[in-house]
Length: 140
View 1 (cartoon, rainbow, N blue to C red):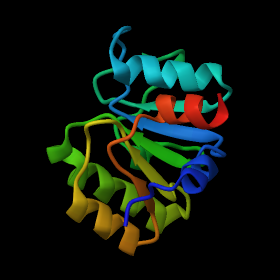
View 2: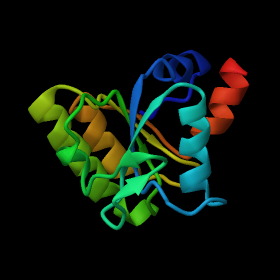
View 3: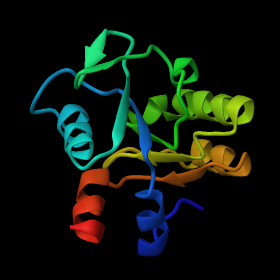
View 4: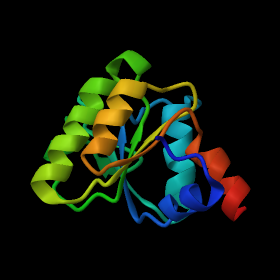
C-alpha cells in the first residue's frame, strides 16, 4: 500500500541523495523546479535523463541503475504509463545494491500494479504527491 501518512512521508524526507528520473533542463517545468527546490534545501540531486549531459549543475545519468553513488530515494517525473519500466529499474537497483529503498511518484503520476510489485520487493512507494509541496507542508 503506497505511503500516505504524514509521519511516513516526513521519514522519507530524511533522504540525503535523491535520484530524479525525468529531471528536466527546462526552467519552469515541475521536473526542473521541484528538484531545484530540493537541491536548495540541501538534498543531493542526481539527475536521470538520457537526453541531457548535465542538469542543475550535476552530471546526468541515462538510467537509475547507472548511478555510481548511493541513492536513498528515487523521485519520478515520467508519465504513469512509464512507471512500470521506471520501477523495474528501481527494483533492479535495490536488489543489486541494497539502496534506492523508496520511490516517490510526483503529483499526477501513479501505477498501482507497479507500486505493489515494488513494495513486494521492499521498496516504499509514494504516489500522486508533490515532494516540494509535502516538504514545505511538513518541514516548512
